[in-house]
Amino acid sequence: MQKTHVLGSLRSIFPPIHQPLLNKRESERLLNAIKTSFRAQLAKEYGPGSDTLRPAITYLPSTNNPPYQTTTKPTPARPTDRHLHAILNNPLFSKVDTAGSAERRPDTTHDAHKAVFEKAAGRGLMNLKRAHGFLLLVLSEVKASAAPTVLGGMKSTGAGLLVLQWLRSSGQERDLSFLTHRGFSSLLIKFMIAEGLEDVAWVWIERLMKQELDAAHKPLPGMSSQLVLNDIVVAKCTETELDGAYQAVLKGKAMADENSLDPLPLMLAWQKAAWQTTVESWMHTTPAVPLFEAFVAMGRAVPSSNIMRAHMDLYHPTSPSSSLAVEYLSNRSQWGRLPLRPRTAQGITSLGIDTVQYLMHADRLQDATNILALLNQNSPWVDDQATRLT
Image (cartoon, rainbow, N blue to C red; front, side):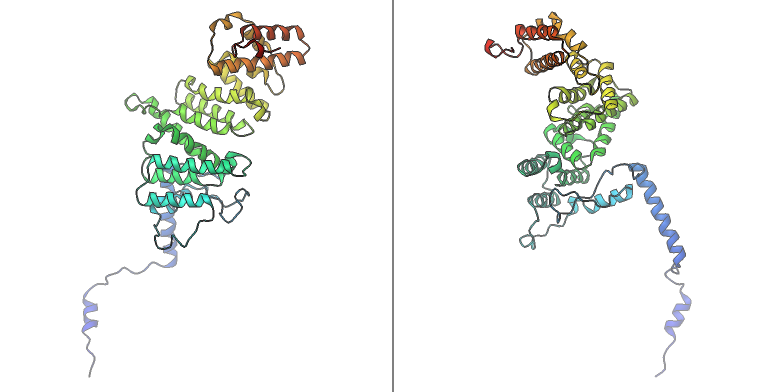
């Protein structure tokens, strides 16, 4: 039986369906062009990557390591790496494994909560209230653990990154409306600070400042750059060193100046850091002199509390001064506005005690006696004569 040449004839009639394959050199050129275009687009959206800047999304420590052992992993510095890592770890794309869930046990308690969160997010059951409850649960376990500090314990949980990825995936980060839920947003920012995701919060501040300039698109109540800045500063004030809190306040002031915004609303964050420097000084180390002076200069340039400014002068790392404190406490008109709010009374009490101690160390016993007498006469903190200072 002879073979027919029908198939060969048909092949000669019709042109080839597929184009010839690219050679190795052409394939590499095409791949490089695609990668360059992809990176350029991401750099346009997320900004250029830099090895010196902390990435917006970082890898989490391995769960095989001890909970509070510091480990180092390669961190994605480029926007492409951060973008792909965020996609691969997106909780909305987590596969819900119902068959093997009973056999697979999480390594830690945090992993168990995160597994529940991912399952709920994957099924579309997650909302802000449940996300807030998840963060509160993780925080309560961190506080009950043996972590040296709360922020240190929060760092290894990965809870902030998980919630942030869910916000992005569900589209809630686009309009920042979740910031109106103050309890949730404040706690989330605290986790983000602990996990090294602070730069994301600064992007939110920048976006809010742009909106605050636009009269037609004012942010909703509760959505303001000053509140986000305040959350950052409050989180950093829990650290032993206050340098990070000072830097955050000064950065917020610089951003407000760049956007032609009134820096006065930012003084709430300034007062938070100043309170920690003075009234809660026992919790913190002595700050660096240049940073301290720049921070104090901001308080002088913008109207702020006279009590706090006088108190800050007493806590200068190298050149403390009691001039403002003595002037403030000796001004009898200051005592005519009683009764005072509890926090203000506490501030005056702390200022008075610190001033008396400073004057006694400087051998200014008469001035110290006069200030102590004023405090006892006016007693803004108590009415019980037996509890007054002696």
